[in-house]
Length: 169
Image 1 (cartoon, rainbow, N blue to C red):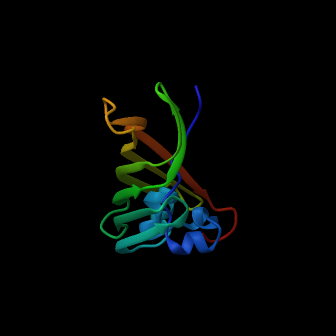
Image 2: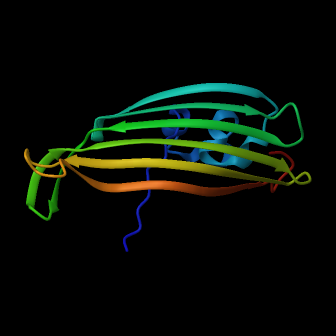
Image 3: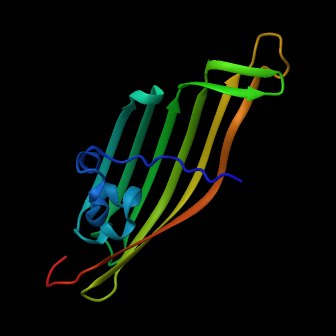
C-alpha cells in the first residue's frame, strides 16, 4: 500500500520560519508541532488561527488552549477544521475523469501533555483524533453520485522532546 500523510497545519510564525519553530514550539504551537515545547514558557494561551491554502482552494481553522502555569505538567487542547476543493483528475470503474472539483473536509482534535524531566530534558505527547474525507462527484445519472477517494478516521499519537545541551532552554 501507499503511505500518505495529511499536511501539517502550522501557524504564521512557524510558516514564516520555514517550520524551524518545531524546536521551540511554545504556547498554542506546541500541540500542533512539538508538544514538549509547551513547557518551555510558563503561560496560559488561547489562540485561534485561520489560513487559506491557495493550491487546493482550502480553508483551515484551528483553536488551541495551552496551560503551563496551573501544574508542573503543561496541558493543551486543540481543534482543527479543514475544507478544500481542489480540481483533480482520476480513474474510476466507469472510465477516466480528467478534471473535477473534489471536496476534502475534516476535523482533528487532540490533547497534549508536556513535562520537564530535570533541567535538561522535556518530554511531550499528543493524542489526536482525525476524521478526513475526500470525495469527488461522478457524472450525472451515475449511481452512486460520488466517489470516496480517501477517508481517514482514527487516532494517532505524536511524541516530542527537547534536550538542552547548554545552560538554558
